[in-house]
Image 1 (tube, rainbow, N blue to C red):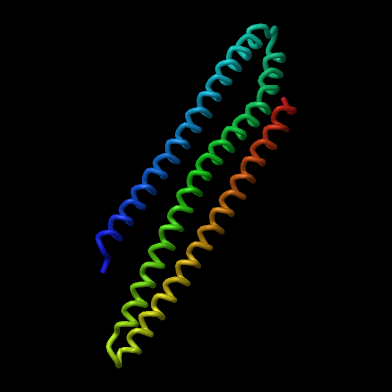
Image 2 (cartoon, one colour):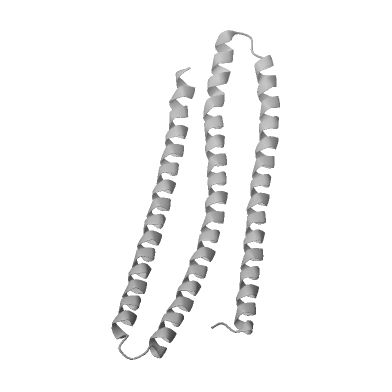
Length: 180
């Protein structure tokens, strides 16, 4: 049985975790707002500059050359923005994941403590039931570790795919800018 002090300590720890996660979430939102403000300011400045350049064009060939010259920087800026956005999201996800893993580990330790306590106080002749319960806990632990490994591998694969797509998009814009 949990004592009142243990329940209050658990509640306090949970509230501290909640406030910590809320703080991290707001930090991520702030980073996202800053990123979008910077991108918007840069886009406005570039639009003004590109509009002035387009107004000074004398013929269609010059306009096509201007458009082509804008493709590569646009692709690079889009890739950089996407990368920043991905970094913000994956950083927040990683922090939330670490807290979840720590809380799961704490819960697992508490459960193992209960299992050990039950085993110590089990009546004679219930050794097989206690052993079965411990085996079930060990199997669940192994399964959880395997799931965590699979999630990590999926995250690594997603990041590799994101990097590949970003690189391909930037590279694809280079020939397009030169062809025209």
